Length: 167
Image (cartoon, rainbow, N blue to C red; front, side, top):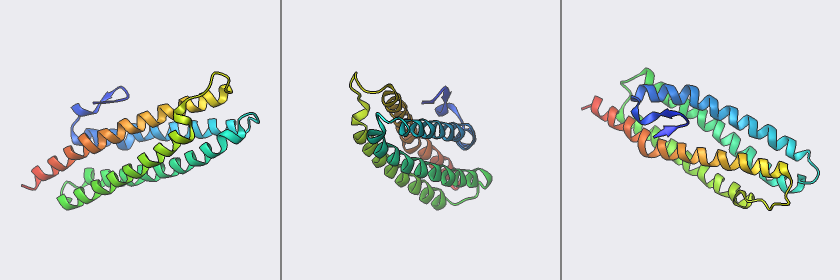
């Protein structure tokens, strides 16, 4: 499976951890910041201010949640990378906690899509609103792909690798 231009499924667990805790998370932080700045501009646009305000407020909650998630995920993955003797239970409990966080983010993304009318804009809508919806839609789709990959491919791979070490 590819995340951006990178085929993560072909990486070792260590390579994938380095990628996620380095390049990928840096890219996500940059995207979060770009969207935040775009929403700030949209909030200054009088024609759409009332429409964009609840969307921006909810996005800022998502941004906060995702940044905290990245911090915690980095901490857990780097601990695993630096200490191969971590117990299988530690890896399992940590991965379970991350998956639960993913579930919370997915619920927040569902609400964002509802607030944005599933990112649909009428032809007559302001170009800034269309641009915000397009950016938010792309962000949601990328985040959903990443969450699917982590939950269904990456974390099981870590647990299988960890289990094999302790057999």
